[in-house]
Image (cartoon, rainbow over all chains, first blue to last red; front, top):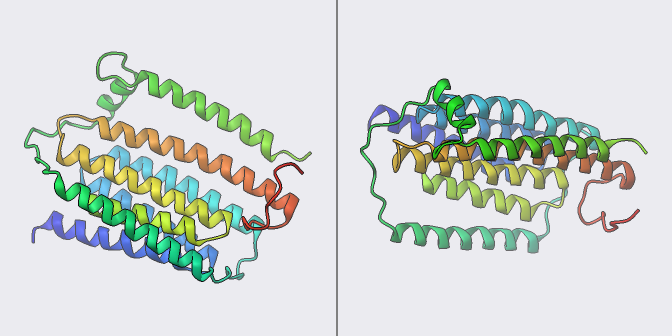
Length: 167
Length: 96
Protein backbone atom coordinates (compact mmCIF):
# COMPACT_ATOMS: atom_id res chain seq x y z
CA UNK A 1 0.00 0.00 0.00
CA UNK A 2 1.38 3.38 -0.96
CA UNK A 3 1.76 6.35 1.34
CA UNK A 4 -1.28 8.41 0.25
CA UNK A 5 -3.47 5.31 0.39
CA UNK A 6 -2.39 4.59 3.95
CA UNK A 7 -3.13 8.18 4.94
CA UNK A 8 -6.51 8.01 3.23
CA UNK A 9 -7.48 4.85 5.08
CA UNK A 10 -6.38 6.25 8.42
CA UNK A 11 -8.35 9.49 7.86
CA UNK A 12 -11.38 7.59 6.57
CA UNK A 13 -11.32 5.32 9.61
CA UNK A 14 -11.14 8.37 11.90
CA UNK A 15 -14.04 10.06 10.07
CA UNK A 16 -16.24 6.95 10.19
CA UNK A 17 -15.46 5.99 13.79
CA UNK A 18 -16.02 9.47 15.19
CA UNK A 19 -19.16 10.13 13.18
CA UNK A 20 -20.70 6.90 14.54
CA UNK A 21 -19.58 7.84 18.05
CA UNK A 22 -20.98 11.36 17.67
CA UNK A 23 -24.36 9.91 16.73
CA UNK A 24 -24.60 7.25 19.45
CA UNK A 25 -22.94 9.17 22.31
CA UNK A 26 -25.39 10.09 25.04
CA UNK A 27 -23.42 12.90 26.64
CA UNK A 28 -24.12 15.83 24.35
CA UNK A 29 -20.87 17.73 24.90
CA UNK A 30 -18.82 14.66 24.01
CA UNK A 31 -20.90 14.24 20.86
CA UNK A 32 -19.95 17.80 19.87
CA UNK A 33 -16.25 17.05 20.42
CA UNK A 34 -16.51 13.90 18.29
CA UNK A 35 -18.11 16.05 15.56
CA UNK A 36 -15.06 18.31 15.82
CA UNK A 37 -12.75 15.31 15.22
CA UNK A 38 -14.79 14.32 12.15
CA UNK A 39 -14.47 17.83 10.72
CA UNK A 40 -10.72 18.03 11.38
CA UNK A 41 -10.15 14.64 9.72
CA UNK A 42 -12.18 15.86 6.73
CA UNK A 43 -9.87 18.85 6.50
CA UNK A 44 -7.03 16.32 6.42
CA UNK A 45 -8.72 14.55 3.49
CA UNK A 46 -8.98 17.85 1.59
CA UNK A 47 -5.34 18.55 2.34
CA UNK A 48 -4.41 15.10 1.05
CA UNK A 49 -6.10 15.94 -2.26
CA UNK A 50 -4.01 19.13 -2.58
CA UNK A 51 -6.85 21.58 -1.90
CA UNK A 52 -5.04 23.52 0.79
CA UNK A 53 -7.37 26.51 0.70
CA UNK A 54 -10.43 24.31 1.13
CA UNK A 55 -8.76 22.51 4.05
CA UNK A 56 -8.01 25.84 5.70
CA UNK A 57 -11.56 27.08 5.22
CA UNK A 58 -12.87 23.79 6.60
CA UNK A 59 -10.73 24.16 9.72
CA UNK A 60 -11.57 27.83 10.30
CA UNK A 61 -15.26 27.73 9.45
CA UNK A 62 -16.38 24.31 10.66
CA UNK A 63 -13.92 23.44 13.40
CA UNK A 64 -13.43 27.02 14.54
CA UNK A 65 -16.88 28.47 13.95
CA UNK A 66 -19.70 25.96 13.86
CA UNK A 67 -18.42 23.64 16.58
CA UNK A 68 -17.82 26.60 18.90
CA UNK A 69 -21.37 27.83 18.19
CA UNK A 70 -22.75 24.35 18.92
CA UNK A 71 -20.78 24.07 22.17
CA UNK A 72 -21.99 27.52 23.25
CA UNK A 73 -25.58 26.57 22.59
CA UNK A 74 -25.12 23.30 24.50
CA UNK A 75 -23.73 25.20 27.48
CA UNK A 76 -26.59 27.72 27.30
CA UNK A 77 -29.34 25.15 27.08
CA UNK A 78 -28.35 22.13 29.17
CA UNK A 79 -26.26 20.89 32.04
CA UNK A 80 -22.83 19.61 31.05
CA UNK A 81 -23.27 16.24 32.71
CA UNK A 82 -26.85 15.68 31.65
CA UNK A 83 -27.32 12.56 29.58
CA UNK A 84 -29.73 12.40 26.70
CA UNK A 85 -32.65 10.04 27.10
CA UNK A 86 -32.17 6.66 25.56
CA UNK A 87 -33.94 6.91 22.18
CA UNK A 88 -37.10 4.92 21.65
CA UNK A 89 -36.80 1.48 20.07
CA UNK A 90 -39.03 2.55 17.17
CA UNK A 91 -36.84 5.58 16.43
CA UNK A 92 -33.64 3.51 16.50
CA UNK A 93 -35.18 0.87 14.28
CA UNK A 94 -36.55 3.35 11.75
CA UNK A 95 -33.29 5.31 11.66
CA UNK A 96 -31.17 2.20 11.08
CA UNK A 97 -33.64 0.97 8.48
CA UNK A 98 -33.61 4.30 6.60
CA UNK A 99 -29.82 4.52 6.82
CA UNK A 100 -29.17 1.00 5.57
CA UNK A 101 -31.86 1.22 2.89
CA UNK A 102 -30.58 4.52 1.54
CA UNK A 103 -27.02 3.27 1.66
CA UNK A 104 -27.91 0.07 -0.24
CA UNK A 105 -29.73 2.12 -2.88
CA UNK A 106 -26.84 4.52 -3.43
CA UNK A 107 -24.19 1.76 -3.38
CA UNK A 108 -26.14 -0.18 -6.03
CA UNK A 109 -26.48 2.98 -8.11
CA UNK A 110 -22.84 3.95 -8.06
CA UNK A 111 -21.59 0.40 -8.60
CA UNK A 112 -23.56 0.30 -11.85
CA UNK A 113 -21.82 3.40 -13.13
CA UNK A 114 -18.30 3.02 -14.49
CA UNK A 115 -16.16 5.91 -13.41
CA UNK A 116 -13.34 6.89 -15.74
CA UNK A 117 -10.52 8.35 -13.69
CA UNK A 118 -9.06 11.27 -15.60
CA UNK A 119 -5.34 11.59 -16.14
CA UNK A 120 -5.46 15.23 -17.09
CA UNK A 121 -2.92 17.40 -15.39
CA UNK A 122 -4.31 18.64 -12.08
CA UNK A 123 -5.25 22.30 -12.11
CA UNK A 124 -3.12 24.39 -9.82
CA UNK A 125 -5.15 25.68 -6.88
CA UNK A 126 -3.41 28.72 -5.55
CA UNK A 127 -4.91 31.82 -4.00
CA UNK A 128 -4.55 33.79 -7.23
CA UNK A 129 -6.63 31.30 -9.22
CA UNK A 130 -9.25 31.09 -6.47
CA UNK A 131 -9.57 34.86 -6.22
CA UNK A 132 -9.82 35.39 -9.97
CA UNK A 133 -12.36 32.58 -10.36
CA UNK A 134 -14.52 33.73 -7.46
CA UNK A 135 -14.80 37.26 -8.81
CA UNK A 136 -14.77 36.30 -12.51
CA UNK A 137 -17.76 36.90 -14.77
CA UNK A 138 -16.44 34.76 -17.63
CA UNK A 139 -17.41 31.17 -18.49
CA UNK A 140 -15.58 29.76 -15.43
CA UNK A 141 -16.22 32.61 -13.04
CA UNK A 142 -18.31 32.38 -9.90
CA UNK A 143 -19.27 36.02 -9.42
CA UNK A 144 -23.02 35.33 -9.28
CA UNK A 145 -22.90 32.59 -6.59
CA UNK A 146 -20.42 34.74 -4.70
CA UNK A 147 -22.81 37.69 -4.62
CA UNK A 148 -25.78 35.47 -3.80
CA UNK A 149 -23.80 34.04 -0.88
CA UNK A 150 -23.02 37.52 0.37
CA UNK A 151 -26.72 38.45 0.29
CA UNK A 152 -27.54 35.18 2.08
CA UNK A 153 -24.97 35.91 4.78
CA UNK A 154 -26.35 39.42 5.24
CA UNK A 155 -29.88 38.04 5.51
CA UNK A 156 -28.72 35.39 7.99
CA UNK A 157 -26.96 38.06 10.06
CA UNK A 158 -30.00 40.36 10.22
CA UNK A 159 -32.40 37.45 10.74
CA UNK A 160 -30.31 35.94 13.52
CA UNK A 161 -30.10 39.22 15.40
CA UNK A 162 -33.85 39.72 14.98
CA UNK A 163 -34.68 36.19 16.18
CA UNK A 164 -32.29 36.15 19.13
CA UNK A 165 -33.08 39.60 20.54
CA UNK A 166 -34.81 39.89 23.87
CA UNK A 167 -38.39 40.96 23.52
CA UNK B 1 -14.03 7.95 -1.33
CA UNK B 2 -17.64 7.97 -2.54
CA UNK B 3 -18.32 5.02 -0.26
CA UNK B 4 -16.91 6.99 2.67
CA UNK B 5 -19.01 10.07 1.98
CA UNK B 6 -22.08 7.86 1.47
CA UNK B 7 -21.52 6.17 4.83
CA UNK B 8 -21.02 9.49 6.63
CA UNK B 9 -24.14 10.91 4.99
CA UNK B 10 -26.34 8.07 6.18
CA UNK B 11 -24.79 8.07 9.64
CA UNK B 12 -25.74 11.73 9.81
CA UNK B 13 -29.25 10.94 8.57
CA UNK B 14 -29.61 8.25 11.23
CA UNK B 15 -28.39 10.82 13.76
CA UNK B 16 -31.14 13.23 12.74
CA UNK B 17 -33.77 10.52 12.99
CA UNK B 18 -32.57 8.90 16.21
CA UNK B 19 -32.35 11.97 18.43
CA UNK B 20 -35.12 14.10 19.85
CA UNK B 21 -32.82 16.94 20.85
CA UNK B 22 -32.58 19.98 18.55
CA UNK B 23 -28.83 20.44 18.99
CA UNK B 24 -27.93 16.82 18.22
CA UNK B 25 -30.23 16.96 15.19
CA UNK B 26 -28.31 20.04 14.02
CA UNK B 27 -25.08 18.07 14.47
CA UNK B 28 -26.50 15.29 12.29
CA UNK B 29 -27.25 17.86 9.59
CA UNK B 30 -23.69 19.16 9.81
CA UNK B 31 -22.42 15.60 9.32
CA UNK B 32 -24.59 15.27 6.20
CA UNK B 33 -23.32 18.57 4.75
CA UNK B 34 -19.78 17.47 5.46
CA UNK B 35 -20.36 14.21 3.59
CA UNK B 36 -21.67 16.16 0.61
CA UNK B 37 -18.52 18.28 0.65
CA UNK B 38 -16.30 15.19 0.66
CA UNK B 39 -18.24 13.89 -2.31
CA UNK B 40 -17.92 17.12 -4.32
CA UNK B 41 -14.20 17.37 -3.67
CA UNK B 42 -13.55 13.69 -4.40
CA UNK B 43 -15.36 13.88 -7.75
CA UNK B 44 -13.45 17.04 -8.57
CA UNK B 45 -10.11 15.50 -7.70
CA UNK B 46 -10.42 12.06 -9.27
CA UNK B 47 -12.65 12.61 -12.32
CA UNK B 48 -12.02 16.22 -13.38
CA UNK B 49 -8.66 17.27 -11.91
CA UNK B 50 -8.18 19.97 -14.56
CA UNK B 51 -11.34 21.82 -13.51
CA UNK B 52 -12.38 23.31 -10.18
CA UNK B 53 -16.19 23.13 -10.08
CA UNK B 54 -16.34 20.78 -7.09
CA UNK B 55 -13.89 22.90 -5.18
CA UNK B 56 -16.02 26.03 -5.52
CA UNK B 57 -19.23 24.16 -4.83
CA UNK B 58 -17.73 22.87 -1.59
CA UNK B 59 -16.76 26.43 -0.64
CA UNK B 60 -20.32 27.63 -1.26
CA UNK B 61 -21.80 24.71 0.69
CA UNK B 62 -19.56 25.61 3.63
CA UNK B 63 -20.74 29.24 3.58
CA UNK B 64 -24.37 28.12 3.52
CA UNK B 65 -23.72 25.63 6.33
CA UNK B 66 -22.29 28.41 8.47
CA UNK B 67 -25.29 30.68 7.84
CA UNK B 68 -27.68 27.81 8.52
CA UNK B 69 -25.96 26.87 11.78
CA UNK B 70 -26.05 30.48 13.01
CA UNK B 71 -29.78 30.86 12.28
CA UNK B 72 -30.58 27.43 13.73
CA UNK B 73 -28.75 28.17 16.95
CA UNK B 74 -30.47 31.55 17.31
CA UNK B 75 -33.79 29.73 16.92
CA UNK B 76 -32.79 27.01 19.40
CA UNK B 77 -31.77 29.53 22.05
CA UNK B 78 -35.00 31.46 21.57
CA UNK B 79 -37.01 28.24 21.82
CA UNK B 80 -35.14 27.36 24.99
CA UNK B 81 -36.02 30.74 26.50
CA UNK B 82 -39.71 30.20 25.85
CA UNK B 83 -40.17 26.48 26.46
CA UNK B 84 -37.16 25.73 28.74
CA UNK B 85 -36.42 22.61 26.69
CA UNK B 86 -34.73 21.73 23.40
CA UNK B 87 -36.56 18.45 22.80
CA UNK B 88 -38.61 18.44 19.61
CA UNK B 89 -41.42 16.48 21.25
CA UNK B 90 -42.11 19.22 23.80
CA UNK B 91 -42.00 22.11 21.36
CA UNK B 92 -45.43 21.74 19.83
CA UNK B 93 -46.64 25.32 19.40
CA UNK B 94 -45.70 27.61 16.56
CA UNK B 95 -47.36 30.74 17.93
CA UNK B 96 -46.61 31.52 21.52
